[in-house]
Length: 361
Ligand code: NAD
Image (tube, rainbow, N blue to C red):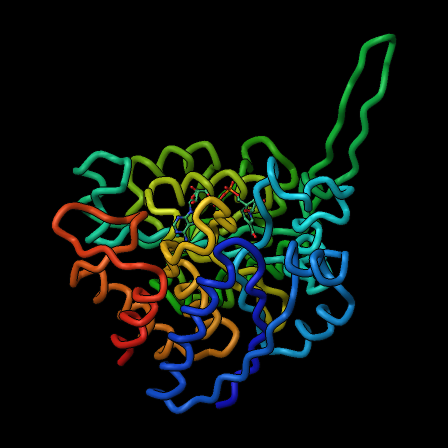
């Protein structure tokens, strides 16, 4: 199979970690008989330096022409970089918001996995972390409270502010379908998180999710209130497989879930549209403090590439080969500086990429 992948190396450590992800993908191509066709795109600060804007029309056309987009990270140090003297709509982050919008990426996926070898980094009690966890938070990204009408006004001399949380059944249905499709590729359990004891939008959410569930009898569905979910994530994270939720709840819960893994350099993410198209990127930023030093951890980006193979190309076996290589390399004691612990062997970004590629089966 020929895979057309648009790559956005971006800024800071972005080019270093994307180079390692490409290395691993090339090895997947060699071992599993695929051809990787990469097209590099400038975005963020790298685009500002060349074109004066964080995202050009040509870059959008190039991103659209691929089957998927693999991104490093964009942005610089806001206190030092000249990019942050520009008006907000010309800064690096504006490019990211714009590309998410034009590509209609409404479903955000963030896995939170605790690897046995990294359990020491987990801030939870040992009796909880011992069980491990492997969950995926699926957050609706283009609706809800962040996109509803809002205003601040005065009434009888008192200042009031209002934000509206709106969802229509179609927005809920399309993300629910994605959630169940993805649960089918995993352990077939879906926890839909809402606040249906209070909010009308949550009651509609629950009703539509239940309708969609009828098409997926193999998936075990449970509903959970968001306050309970926030507690369960630290009390017993092993119970979760796919968590499906609306925009604001997902914003908060996905950060909570990633914190309990304790390893920012390991966390992948994906944003998908209605087709198989998606943008895949690590959850962390461009880490300008360590850029250019060959010390960044490339694993989050490499795992994002695995998600890309699974969700945009339906290459589950190849995605698994990458995830297995990560586990194997960790089990052999190889670590980048951010996840280093006693008795392990420390390597740089490039060597970690080599090791991952060498372990692809
Ligand atoms: P950050 O995630 O870049 O860095 C936070 C800390 O984690 C730093 O100490 C950094 O060195 C470390 N770190 C991050 N990734 C690492 C990796 N792969 N290996 C080893 N250590 C790693 O967050 P920040 O410092 O708040 O933001 C820096 C820039 O990144 C800002 O311009 C911000 O806007 C941008 N950012 C971009 C995205 C994105 O492109 N989606 C996301 C978040 C932040």
